[in-house]
Image (cartoon, rainbow, N blue to C red):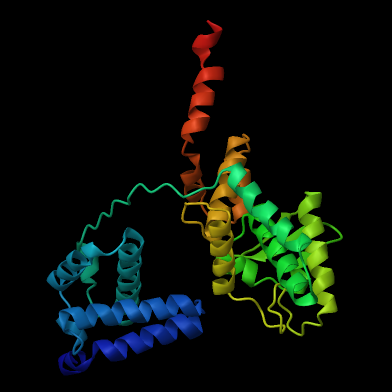
Length: 310
């Protein structure tokens, strides 16, 4: 038995673990890819890719210490990958003693407030899109202008993630009832109401243009030749609009999500409702938007401080 244990390699164990994640746990392809990358990095960095029994507590400590140059989220992901692998081995191999259990790992996340746009900056972008639509000269220009306006209106109108937007199907948009069916992280489904007429108008206009273009793909947002729109196309669109509007902040599609949540909070919308709309599984994630805008702070302390009523 001892001889068999000594022959078990990290590479073989990793493949068994990934097969378990794929076929039994049915994890997302991106998660499995991250597991492979992180665990292969672990074995390569510490040169213990030969035998599983060679892994010690000291190896883990050295490797975790070597991750200090990475961003917090990356470090957290890599440790989570290794922890999932070690837990699997502990269950599958009775002889394996998980050395990660003896380590007390405390990662302190950096305090990073999300970048948000002001109402005026959002208005600039929407006005720019309206100008582009009004100056259309041909069907091709109309296709792109109307589509781009619908994308921005939906990003800001629903707070959805870029992956959720690009994954929308025609059947997910219910224009009769003003609802969007969104498939979020972990394949979780949520329904977001689109109640504002200006957003509905943009979506209906895009549906009309899309129908006239005879797009064969079932994706709601498509290219001119009918292919489903990819995230990079949306990122480039947002970057172009931010540049044309001379917005100096680093604006990405996710900035619209941050802005959506922050401005709702400033309108005194309950954070639990915002959590549901954004599709956060934990309210702790939503609480990042509880930071106080410095201009909002001045308004609060000037007009709502209890001392003013004394």
